[in-house]
Image (cartoon, rainbow, N blue to C red):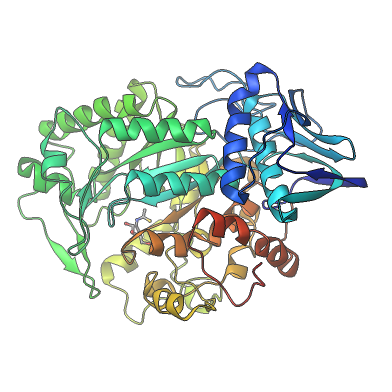
Length: 536
Ligand code: TNX
């Protein structure tokens, strides 16, 4: 199984699961059970039609430690008091479950429907691993399991390449299979605006038309987003919206030129892409009318998220004072609307509230990265603007912690899935795609590299809000490209975010990873067929 369960106790005997197996369930668990049956059929082709064999029930499992960090839906994790700030969902969200296979049958339990859902996800993986000709002979065992971190996410860039709702649902399915519970949608950036704001129609009519180069633009209608939010919520995944401000706003300026600086400059990056230097101006009233219009339209579309991500990153050319003024006012507007603030680490240069969450991404030390074998290799000549950004970034995480905020761990070195793959594909066609995918200046990273770290070695676990990977789509042109960079990296993310088992033993992990491929094949997910893994 991936992520590895907290405890596994082998038993005696086996249970044989076939299409004539069925599930006994109390009515409160009918939803998770129906979705399990459907997902198992998609994973394996096996449709359960019987009435007995698997029993699910609501029963507490507190014999593994509760998760550390915060939840994106604002619910307190097991064992923590509800946070005082507004926006919390109230009810405790305990994800810990038990799963027992014995000669008599399979039992899955947990104190919440969410916990039972996570346990049934483990059962999907067990069945897939043991299935042969429509029969899964499951070895008896008792698993008691729970997450290490409460926020386990993926940040998805839907701007540089627009990914439509069908593709986003495939990504949600991947997150679900690996017990990840946050999809952070990067909805706005220089190249496009991807979400409807009815009071600001030009954002979608004008701002959504582009992407990088001549790739098609696009945006999610309110109805499409509502469907995605519900699809994710059915799988206990929270979609957290990001509105990136005050930088990365060229699409806003295209739609509403009156918000743009007098002379917005760009810097060519030499790879067909460019940095946009213009930012929203905190000194102008029209900036704040705009931000309020956007927040008032976006927040109701994500009722399950206790957080709004305000971006705050890479405000090229903006003074520190203006950046801080912008972040503080935008954050206040978010809090006034009952939501908590999350932002990229640059927001730590402003005054934070201890309930804010800061996403730590720039783990690169400009002075030592050239000698660090794990870190991306800096190009010979970094643009001066990037050197300056890296020098400042060093102080962000300490500043966040000094202010009492927690960190989402998203280091470029370990969790930027737009690093090229170092592993070679066994498939010649795929090998061609691999060679053009990922940002060259990051340097390539192997699948083994992706599991050879520990979040707790970077940040004290008590100060970790969660663990989140990021996929940026500058080099990605379609959904095959996207999936090729995501898989097999997503399971590695889950191993770090959910599993308590650390360090990861590569041969043991690679064997578990190999057993995932039948499900991926059945799901038609594209994955890097690395020659380092003995795929089934
Ligand atoms: C930095 S990470 C960015 C993105 C780029 C990414 C490429 C962050 C907060 N900003 O705008 O797409 O690098 O990896």
